[in-house]
Image (cartoon, rainbow over all chains, first blue to last red; front, top):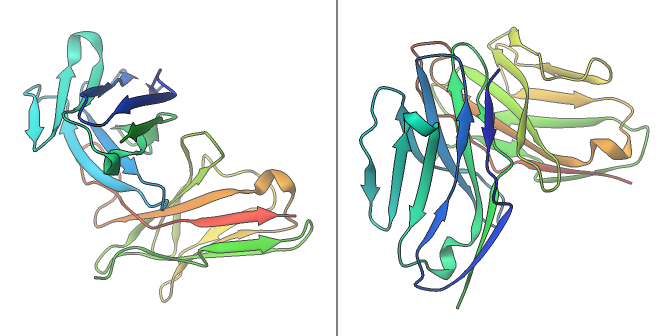
Length: 113
Length: 118
């Protein structure tokens, strides 16, 4: 069965601090895709990144970076120099085989000025 | 900017009434997915539809809930005889291609419908 675990329910940081959001996944498939979505207070879901299981290269996009490690089944997300606008709930998600996109429970990030 | 459109944004119903949630996918997308988000929970898959077909309804409650995606018009998620436990945010997503081993397309989500049952 597919499963995504985001152990951190809530995180609070002071502006300009770095913060890492953890994501651990479970799947028996060898081909799968991992995603991160952001849900700001307005409620919509904003796509951040998609990564397939054959590409373990880490990715950086501005202040965002992702660390994918198959050995530990983790796909962690780091925000560098956090800003108040980063305050949101962040969801990690997994798609494999013909199963629907499976979401973790999310991590609520609060960035305090 | 024709993203995934959901309406209404907020819907209030009394127990026993019917709720109809509408979702218009992005232009060119023929695959629609419905998810439910309970307070402080992640999104739970409900149903996946292609035009005029239900492909996967494994996450749909067996009673009172139904979904359709007609040839013309939006996808509709219908909840009959709503109860307080149905209160949640319902999200619709769409994609150009369907789920499958070779599909890595991201889903585009709407802004959701917040259903409140009094």
